[in-house]
Length: 521
Ligand SMILES: Cc1ncc(COP(=O)(O)OP(=O)(O)O)c(N)n1
Ligand SMILES: Cc1ncsc1CCOP(=O)(O)O
Image (cartoon, rainbow, N blue to C red):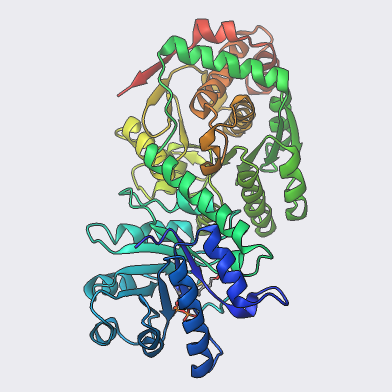
């Protein structure tokens, strides 16, 4: 059964004056692939009438109809199956009552529920709620897209299909599909939607939009975990040149939600590379700013409760605008608050690049291999190449692991970069400045990319973000080598302004000559 666009009805959400059957027919024309009749307040006679009329309509469109909770109603109208909740009739009893071959689905919110669904041989599971929803009073916390990935992994090796439910809209569907892919590459078979279709004045358009995003995302998720550029050292330096020139000619507006320690130097380094900074954190202005800016940096260095709200909204709107979001999880291992905040952010939006030192990226990946002292890393990985590649694959973005040697990966290829000067580690905020430069370069790469056919399924355009991240690392590290050599530089105090000057003066030719970059296996 095709569960890709699964409509769950709710007559209480229909726009005033819109009849249920009219909305249902429009949704069917728009391409819903399965319908569940869900009546939470109707008495049995009314439920039966609505289910019978809906079944006749679905039959005309050859779309299977399932009944929520009520096996008796499903039997009475000869429905294709039932959807059961955890406190409804157990699957084994429903299976005995329903005709052979009926479809039985069950709601799952935890690993325990999924294991039981496997034991009782459900045909599919409804996983959620993913996000908060106005449609149903939830009895447990939303599981988020990352929670979905964990439940999907628990379905590995079974032929049980999975749909997600709860708060799913056309504006967050791409994030849902990309963010929920499990470590084992298990993906959703469909999405169950109520209000985004039922409450819409035009259910046909709403369904069509969801379906088209679903299909585009599926194509792009199956295609590869990351983008598919192939280059030699010369080619990557060509790409870096294009992006550096792009930053200077396009001067992208780089929105930065960064920490109070580095705010000023981050704004200055952004100007130095030729981009334009805007530092803003209020949740109230995130929607407006996402329409102006070309990229967003989220740096959690000095989090306060209110700033998380701004970051949640900021990334969400920037994803929707198909612009890049760079996450700098500064000191994420230092406190539970930082950890849970990053988890919340990654449940809400898709980063284009994640940049961090070994301690930060280990904490993000749940690894104990590298530790942190506050925001500084106190160790490294045995196999940084593989770690960076695996994290990029898992998070479905470019990952930059910083240190004496830097590593950049898109989940396929890994680049090792060996430029830099020890003074970079002596001044505060050099890592944060790198986040700003990466965002500026990604913003330019995104603006330079064409709006290709597949762009609907992505959360950015198909920009070359791997080259952007590599270019940003080379810019800062090679400029640091120039700055450290200057006669007027005597230590960290004189190094920082010199670094800004050298970044502003750096030319692509300098990078071509000096880049110590190689692709590693
Ligand atoms: C596809 C799908 N998934 C989950 C649910 C929720 O079912 P349940 O937990 O039984 O809650 P109610 O729908 O009865 O409120 C669903 N209906 N469909
Ligand atoms: C029935 C149900 N079960 C979990 S969330 C939910 C409602 C989802 O509704 P919406 O798609 O409007 O958020």
